[in-house]
Each structure stands twice: as structure tokens, then as C-alpha cells.
Length: 161
Image (tube, rainbow, N blue to C red; front, side):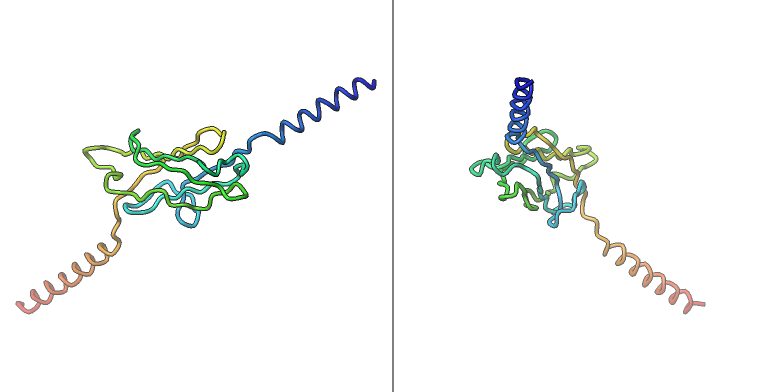
């Protein structure tokens, strides 16, 4: 009976110590500057990476967590980001979208992917797309021009009759 208790105690300690040595893998997201998750960006908008829950002990402070951004499978840019002492990365700008990222009728869709890997955690990725500028002021201006034009036409027609 003593041997069984000793063997079970040793097994328990081994399991407990292996759990303590396990890598802590967190999650990452592509966000805006305040950490709100995004998957659609406007032309000229910055793409941020935010991460939390990684093991700061195993996040190499010299190399950090590696990331790369691809467009249709071709590397656009890459870099490294280090975690803070809690294993987190606050929203960090990594890329500003360009006209090359916007889908066109000729080129079709543009697949924008951010790959991220920290310590020995598995490679993870997020997909996003870029839209051209939407100019809401234009629709307001167009409506005002149409209104003024229609009033002018009304006034001209009214004077003739």
C-alpha cells in the first residue's frame, strides 16, 4: 500500500511539474488603435496587432513574437513584437493599407493575411480586406448641388410662364 501511495505521489508530482513547465499560448487579433477587432479596413487605415495570454518567460525578449503580412500569398512586410511582463501586447501598428491592397475588377479580390507566432505556440493567422475610401461628404454635396440645380431650373421655368 505504501508503494502504491508513493508511486501515485510521484506520478502526481510529475504531472504537476509538467503542467507548470508547459508553454502558455494566448491569442492574437488584428484591431484598430483601441483594440477593437477588425476584418475590414479603409484605404490608408492602420492595421494593429494585439495579443494577450502568452507566457512572458518564453517570449524571447531579443526576437519577440514574429508576424508577417501577405497579399495574395506574397510577403508585404514582417517584424517582431515583444510582450510585456504579463505576456500581453497592446495594440501596436504594423501596417498602413495602400492602394495595392484594394480589390479591383481586373485583379479581383486581394487576400490580406496576418500570420503570428509567439514562442513555441502554433502559427496563427487572421484574414482582412481593404475597401476604398467612402466619401460620405460627397453624397451630401451632390444632394445640395441637385437641390440648388432643381430650384434654379424651377425659377427659370417659372419666369418664362
